[in-house]
Picture 1 (cartoon, rainbow, N blue to C red):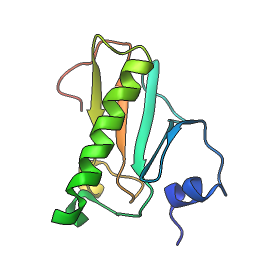
Picture 2: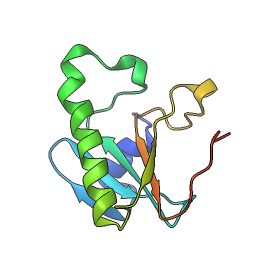
Picture 3: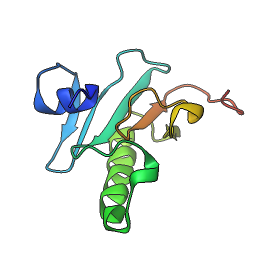
Length: 112
């Protein structure tokens, strides 16, 4: 598989890891858009949010729980933004689901 995030998971591409367990990996974004900007990804390849199944509900909750816990640890207790893009029209550039967590600056709306 030629997936950037799968290569990060298997260690063939380095990343600045924040957290890892048997289900997810969190690492700093290489092009941060805020003072805190990291990604939380599942270790199992799921290309888009459209591919989530009923069986993936615990994994989706674990991604969200991990994001909020790490945001607090990274100094974002006052607030942060989470973003998940879906497919090309939604702005998804790596087709492996991932949650961006951004914080320590004022976020604007609409995002763009």
